[in-house]
Image (cartoon, rainbow, N blue to C red; front, side, top):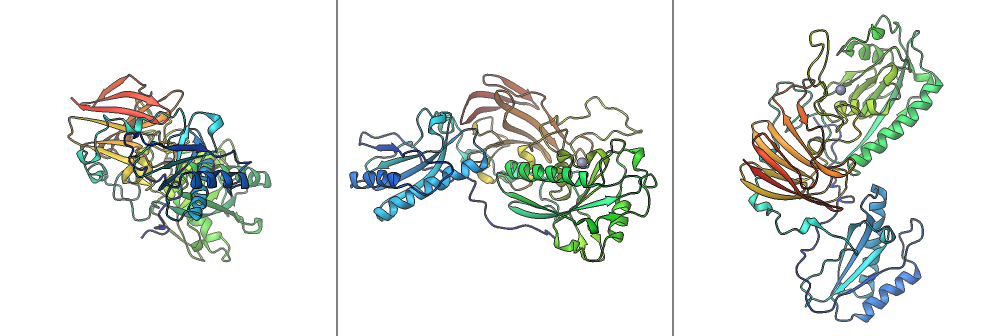
Length: 490
Ligand SMILES: [Zn+2]
């Protein structure tokens, strides 16, 4: 059963579909940028109202009024939201002046800092076939004529492959495990300190934990395009759990690879005060104090723990030097809330080394030190919609526009090539130095902890190409709006 799956559509942070852009006709089109806004204001100033009034009254034949909030191409989620609100407020006001107007508001990126934060008004008549209401100097590869029509691509379902490995609690494919959160979620997480006589949890630990949870909350909000809201609650000191055994008795200082600590978690919940209603939380983060001699964390996807007061779910555990480590905490939530797999290779005495222990590189939080997720993982978590994904299976040649994966917005972000059952090639845009294309292979035949995603070490830049698995991926062009890619079957 899915415990927190809201079905509220995430419309706020996803740019609406733009009106189709055709040739600019000879009939006049009026464009004006409203006077600058002060600070982070949204309501129109009297001057801005009079500018809109002049446009409405000065163009009585006009029937379309387009308000474009201009943001820097590198803008944060909050800045994106701000310009969208400004654009909406401008169009709402125009509509009050002339209820017959057809109004349309949107956002567009710019690289020109002086335009950022402003609202561009475009007024046109029905006789104008259309106009590109882009801010000045905005090239836009997304309208390139070479782009393959979506009708000529394969249905998204062809590329949303099943996980063909047997493990039920984590999954690298579709459908998602029943306990994994999907889409727009608000998750309340209870942070529970556990205290050992030989591994204390102190007020200093608690202070570091506050900074770490703030960071985890922020990176999930940003990487999910605002779809994931985490809210941590800290257990008051009188309820911190004092364990009856030592950390040494739990063999924590031995740092045993892939040591399942379920029994420690069960003991902690058994010792917890009955006043704590664990059942009212979407997740529980257990943490020890900081110690350099002990390391590791563990997420418990799909596992629930009976307590004196409710069933604890979405449980994760951070130990020693992982206590207060935001990247480890974010990684464990990837398991415990979203059912994601470990992408690095588990090393242990029976497998002391492999040629590439980190086949997914640092591109993803479930691999090594990543602060972003692969587009594939974002698709698994329901943060990308159908219009963000372009699926290829047997098309000999196709061309695609993608925005980089970090950007909120409604344009495509992920090209998937279905290779066989459970095996997919993925192409996405990344900004790592210069913007380029990251290519990786999702092979669900490979288990969690055995390296189920194999990523290229470096990006493919503009003008370069890469041949992999019988496919050639060529980066035709890159600009501030995104990347144009040709995909050819060899
Ligand atoms: Zn892990």
